[in-house]
Length: 427
Image (cartoon, rainbow, N blue to C red; front, top):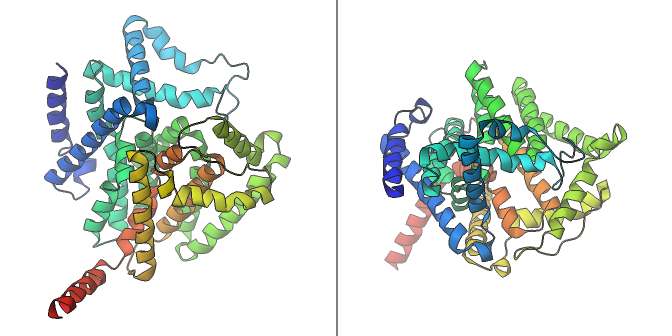
């Protein structure tokens, strides 16, 4: 039965991607849309397989834990609908609905898993509880995020569609982590919907009801699935909106705005003890340090002061931008991550050496840089698990890699290689 359901739904969604206007307006052909969906489904299947046969060593059992819990919720829906629809809004913690940034004894920390499990329980209604059928549903749903970013970047960098297409859908870590049945796919979709709404709303000089709805949906996805990201996303979006009113001053607006955010980050505690953001980050780091795993690495503990953050900045950058080192490799996944990050760093050097102009990106580039940098630093300050860092950073890789690849002068590089080859042939 599972194979019949899988084949039937795969055919159905392969047909749907060629009919949904949001997809077809991307400019991609029907064949390309189907191939992209199939790539995501294959990546999701591989993710599930890793979760079974590699879980004990690579710590990849979360996806199957979500599935098991979703089966319980599915049966709860059938047998006790009242409990199913109300248990999401209750908490047994003594602190109630506070402890927004905490990793333990926190309603908000539990919410990200609860929301995701509820979604999977809805999938189970149609899949009869089969994990790999749910992969198809999830791949289709998260395809909205990938295509939203593709449409934005394709518009911002005219004439660079092949490079943008490859950079959007074939970055290994992005494809893997956002296609597997885990939260990353939906988190990225939330970020992408926000970027899509702001970019095209500004371009069209109007925010339609659909764009506002997409923006609110995106923010809610990020808030419920990884709440600390919304604290970084909203300031970045507001700064972008402000910069769009003065497009020629975008560089200064972003620079001054983030200078203000940094000062506010360290001084807000004087307004209220609940706004002690440095202590919240330091506490989160302590919680991660206590979680021992195969890919945890020793790090300097963070002092909740401006000097402490400054002192830990090089460590945070190395953790999120450079690692895993070859010495960090313990299994296939960490090997793939190590190879990928080194290739991306090589591409960055290529970008610095030879890049083109003609972008219509404007303030989009500043948003991508400032938001991505804030996310990478937040991860690096608080996390010492290389495996978790690779997963967490996957959702912002497209915001950095796509603009970089789109601006590399590929025709010049191809001509240079061809001339070198001709030179050696003539020797």
